[in-house]
Length: 461
Ligand SMILES: *Cc1c(COP(=O)(O)O)cnc(C)c1O
Image (cartoon, rainbow, N blue to C red):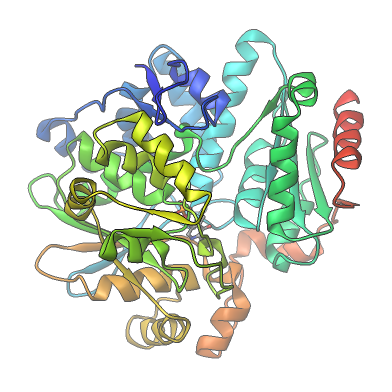
């Protein structure tokens, strides 16, 4: 299996190379040269299997010769053993034909654990083969950083540094980043906001001496291996509701378009998905683009579903690549136009996008009202992101069963949930001691040289 760049100018890579590279050298994102198919028979055979076995069968055709079968099964088992629910991704019913896929039973209580846990295992196994070490540096507004810390702590061939904006993440998110005690993971509280953190990480990737000197790698959501790991729960949940004999629909709370793009891949592999609905909060560029064909930014407004407060969804480039007939030059042109605020999607591309995706947006008031109503009528406590999904899904319900992805545990966003329904959600028992654990972090200024010196010094030890 080969991977090609969405901008057409970077070398083709193997799975392992694409996993280690992240962003392609031409600025594009890696996608598989072709999507492996699963037959109806192979899909129905997934019914009733443990989540780990479904993971193996769905991902294996994409991996080439990266791992042996035995090795890959071992990595999957290690990735998901720390989850707090034996089903890993359980379904609960919200209404007559509406289901919630709970993706928040991982160690940091958000769906990012599914991909990050497995990415950590796969990177470590691949590095161990060659005895190499890498340094991963990432910026976070909260969820990515905590998921990465949990996934990479204690891995012997990786040093991980997470930059988060000092004073601007929730206490649960901060403690999830600062309480792991392993020496290879490092939390940096940087003075500045999330954009500053992200800009310094970019600077490090653009400093070739530093990049090569520390063997820099990234784990943000454009990493193909993360998208692939998220394809699995579309299959596991759809077969639980009768696929492939019965079609199902999905609604996905969307920020960087990674999670919903995984659904698009599942459909391309042969899973009979009816609607794939993009749900946004008031940062609604994707909903506007699908409705009007105009993909234009108009500034990020903070919301109570902060992990979706995004102007430009990086993974949208992957679906544009298909919508433009896999023409890398056309994609490069659009991304160039993005720098001056946006672009108009061509008629044929828009038609393809509308065949693949429906969309909707949810206001702040609607988010709170949905948290309240879901609790009153079903007893389910939703996090604000999941509530955005549920609200948008309600406008798309029909005879086909709808599965809405619940992307985080409500206790990760206790203030917004308490404001909406008057009850403060509790952390699951297995994490109840989070507030008693010792914190370990370094506070640093928004200064590239200081950050680089800190990283160099830490990896030397
Ligand atoms: C990251 C995140 C999202 C957005 O997911 P994308 O893959 O970026 O679209 C939604 N909800 C929560 C809780 C998240 O952490």
